[in-house]
Image: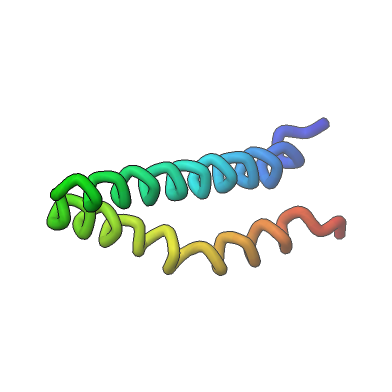
Length: 69
């Protein structure tokens, strides 16, 4: 298997990891907010906005890359 064939699968797994980290950070920010750290929680959620903004593009690009030619 050529290395170029592995790239879409690698990117897919990296994206899965990114989404799992997003979920974990969101859970932690909710816990922090519940325990009086509202500003820190807001900062964490603000940083997660980049993941949300890019998610659809990443999904579409991966779908195109994984489609057989």
